[in-house]
Picture (cartoon, rainbow, N blue to C red):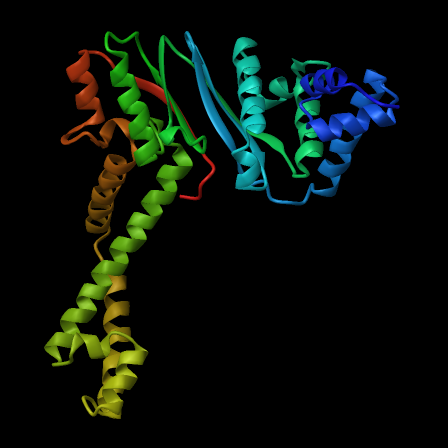
Length: 331
């Protein structure tokens, strides 16, 4: 049975499928729209199931603010070719618009929203049938605050940020600047108090171990210098072997270097003052907070001041209360 262009376009609008897929579905369904929709759904489900173990690492990340509510969403796919397709980007935008309008808090709520004659989850699956790629809705994040700012990095739809402020801003552009800061500097928290306890514990452990290692290595280097050995030659077994081969040291001297490195390191490790190690480690933690807490970071537009200083210059009691950041790129 021949199908009309008008019917094909109608089904395309209903399903989001391509013209060729809509034509084929209508032909199989003998122009029955309900049957045609079911054919498209089943095709999408089959492809989604077949490619369920594939890695959906590309996609479209979008952000939207509506008054005091904002959200970031990522619609993922397998290839950049599909990610840059106008229909794919429109689907992501339509999903985000619906999620923000409904004030959805979770990706499960988003997936359950209606979209045409199906749910959003079904629409995503149907789109898999069109592209032949695995697709999934991921990275849904929301914030609510008196004022919000958003940023889509270079408008390339792969990195978006959303920042919440404690009050409305006289100069909304200042909020945009902070949203750009979050994109560029990837902070882990707003301030020291909001750094997760497990992160603090992990970083403190690293700081302590690094401090101990450095102090022991300094003692070893001092002992090697005192014994008259070249630090490059004594650095590792490869350099020691090179020193022997070139006649810089003898086998006996090589053994002496190894002895000094082992004995001095162990002696220093056993006698390190705990308070000194803790003080140095705390200094390392202060540097960690400076580099990784948004308000403590140097402001990228003027590194002589912090982000907190920048906000105070804008309005005395203006500050950030939360932020969200989502990127498709490994960092």
